[in-house]
Length: 111
Image 1 (cartoon, rainbow, N blue to C red):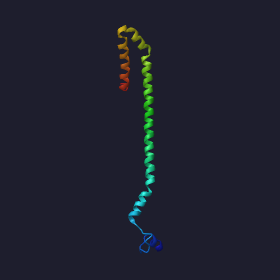
Image 2: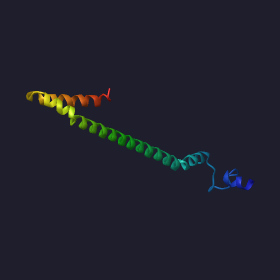
Image 3: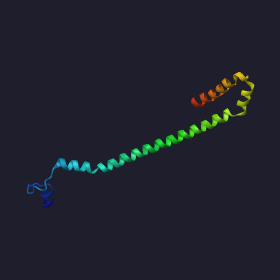
Image 4: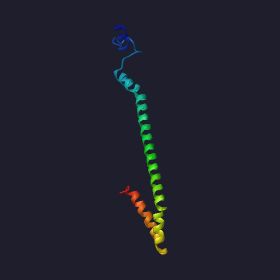
């Protein structure tokens, strides 16, 4: 063990080739973990991207469902009856009012 200490710690300064440098040793230890740190950060970044993509899919699905509901409501028999009961000069404003009511309901979250 003493022979190994002589080489590794260079206690006797017998070798200029192998010299123990505590700062370099400390740096070497931290540098050796750099790749693992990069891998962990990369995995966290990919996980965050996947969460964002999932949120986008949920949003798109919700939007598609709401659009389908609005289209169904606008093309419903009740809307057709409302349009037929309106005067000819009032049909467009009536239709726009119906559409705006459904859009307002959608934008307020159904409240």
